[in-house]
Length: 410
Image (cartoon, rainbow, N blue to C red; front, top):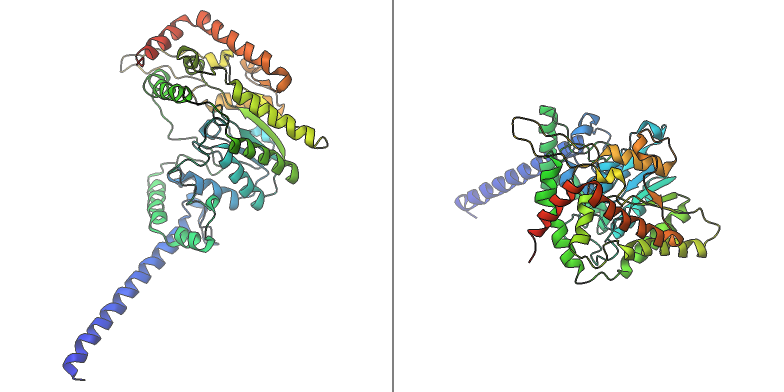
């Protein structure tokens, strides 16, 4: 072979080796940075820096991030649910008295995701308490895993564990979150989530009235129209709730279920829009029936409490602050971020009621009621009566709600 022919081959080989080395070097650099920063809590290594704990952007991949928090911490108790729990329940309250609590609630989560995350948690931690928010309308929603939620890409979704870990460690998507985390720390801009998993920061800061008008009511209108097509209870959701109770019984975990509240303005929409089940009888009956069935089948097991906070209690009827003209600042709401999300001030009252702690806010002394099959009818009547009372005691707010909902008449 002539030297002229060998020369291009050598040049190509050198180029290939140089390109391969560059690629491997880039992969190594990304892997080192991804494991040092550990932006989603799933790339923990001995050299991972705790200085990034308050700067991890897990809001970009909450299912991966919450699984990482569970797997790489030490926890005694977990708080699960949708974004209602994600925002409202504080895992660092002094009332926990040293108990290590993780808030692993997920935006838009379903009962099936609660089961998957609780199962994952019991595989990594020895828990003694689980508080789970069960949303009204979940059991009548056939969707088990929300599409595009990131569940399948997370550790909860199964699949090849080695492949997933490789992607977490050396993946470009993780590296993008690493860069965000580095920038957050550089600018001292705290991430949305705390190291214990609570969505505490980067909440919608618009006035309550604006969020209700431009988001909550629109969603409620679409939601009631969907419910008019079907409110059949999903068997898969019922199976998931049975499995949650069975898992806690097997692992000797105290289980408390709660129905999170809605603001009265939002709750009124279901009656104004003639929802087929405005009191959510189907949901409350299903929750209560499953608990009763499990108790009957396992009388030796610890009881499962179901707390119901979704009604027209005065705390859920917080007056909607009026719109003001800039530069005047709007009066902030104390208990509500929007029509469906309570703030930690109300979440603390809920936790105090469920856990038997002293309720520091006197307005919350009688907030929420335990629910079972025997009290279901009385509870539904209390809610219906509360709606009538809300119309009388908050006439301006109710008029405003009705006027806004009239805009959606088709």
